[in-house]
Image (cartoon, rainbow, N blue to C red; front, top):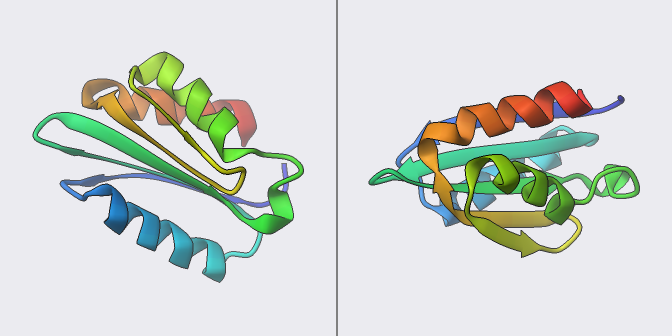
Length: 104
């Protein structure tokens, strides 16, 4: 599809830091889906942000739901930004790889 996907796992960063980074990445790359995962003390969490131009194609809570089917945990949010906690950090990269392969 069109747009840029930025998927990454950053060590030991809390959700507010991931959200801030996601905001800045979406500002910088106008058509983008940003998926950032991290874990602190083996507890994983994920932030997904979709640029407004791609909202009709991708909804962040739906992407989170697909991810947590692999990683466990749960969450939600608005169409443009969603987050999940309680994620199995061992499965984070597998979940992100799944989304990458499916949508990009």
